[in-house]
Image (cartoon, rainbow, N blue to C red):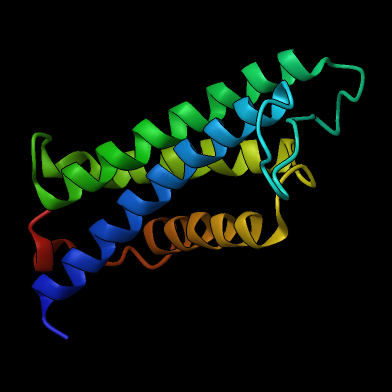
Amino acid sequence: MGSQTVKLLIAAVLLLHGLGHGGAFVAALLARGGRADTGAWGAARLWALPSLSTSAATIVAGVFWTLSLVGFVVTALAFWGWLMPPAIWRQLAIASAIVSLVGIVLFLGTWPAFNTLAALAVNLAVLITQLWTHWPDHAVFGT
């Protein structure tokens, strides 16, 4: 697989992961008031603070998912070298993965298992590749 293909795939994963956080936020908003059939997407609730109201939990979730959405979208743009300096993508990826991971842990059990596991897998892949393996190599992508 060529380096341009790998670059495109990585950027696509980062972008889709970011957009997925937007979907989670919308589902949390819709489930909050019971205004729509959201299937397995329940109202936001913090397991660590069970007495927190659904509205307050939705605001907290909204902060995490909005930061993750913006963070991963900007990361994808920077990775590809669009509108953002490519040199910042690694730090953005790490920060976005940490914010997303903390949000997932705080709201564990609120949303469908598949979505939770997929998001955890992407976050862990980002952290492992950036903190331990340092992949992709700086020389390959010029970052």
